[in-house]
Every structure is written in C-alpha cells, then in structure tokens.
Length: 203
Image (cartoon, rainbow, N blue to C red):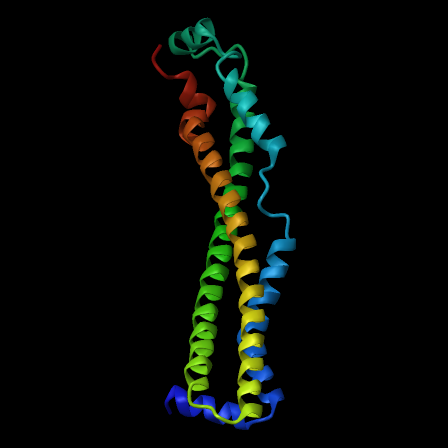
C-alpha cells in the first residue's frame, strides 16, 4: 500500500485512530527517555576516584629500597605494602563501576538511535500529509490534515527535546568513561600488585 493511500485512509478515519498511531510511535521513546534522565547514573564516584589517586600518589612509599633489597637477598620482609593491598580492592571496585558506566553508555546510545528512527518515521508521515494537501480541495479534510501535521510537529518537538537531553547525558558519560580509562592506565596490573611479585622485582 502506498503512502498516498495510507494518508487517504487515515484522513477518512476518526481522529482517535490517528492519535493512537502517533502515540504508539512516540510513547515508549518519550517514557524511556524520561526514566533514563531521572537516573543519577552519569556521575563519577569521586570518593573512590580520589582514594585511588591518593593511593597511587604514594604507592611505593611503604616499601622502600632497603625492604626490597632485604627481600631479594634474604626473603625477609619488614612489612607488607598496605597501599598495594588497598589498590587491589579499590581497583576492583573501579572496574565494577566502569562496567556499569559502559552499560549505561550503551543504553543511552540505543535510546538516541531509537528516537532517531522514530523521528524519521514522523517526518516521513508529515511530508506525506503535506504532499497530500496539494490534492485536497475539501476544506474540512484540509483542516483535518493540518491538525494531524500539527500533532506530528508536537511529537517531533518532544522527541527532539528528549534527544538533546540524552545527548548531553551521553557526553557526560563519555567524559567520565575517558577519565576512568586514564585512571585505569595508571593502576599496575594485578600480578604486579601482589606483594610477593612486587617485592621480588629487580631494583
């Protein structure tokens, strides 16, 4: 069935039919977007972030030259490096939060793409009505068509507003993702953080 015939059928149908169509097209996107925007899941855990940064800043302070030398020569350990033990725990927490962050990025990206698809459909529908208007000579039918176009415009505006807010959130999520990524690069590998592995390193 062509778009032209679809438009004719819609214009001949009750207004409630048309409103139901565009509601089905847009309702889920708008609802999902509002739910996502209410979630406070785009913020960095600054306490965890600062704690890791602080631990990294003096990571080697607890086990100095003499302790490493004694361990290498005599397998004698003065004390464990508490900072490294802390970093293993904090790093695991950061990894878990990073996984959640990446999942949130995927969700927001998917919602933006879904809105894009809906907007394309609405704009095609609007154009179909506009094209059809050139061949409508009945004033009542023309007013009805224009009313439908106005209703489409309202939905387009609402969706574009949601999309703008989601894009703002996505930018923040991506910024935080890069910050966490840079912090991860500063954290030694797990096997390097294990006490026995670290203390047996050459000086």
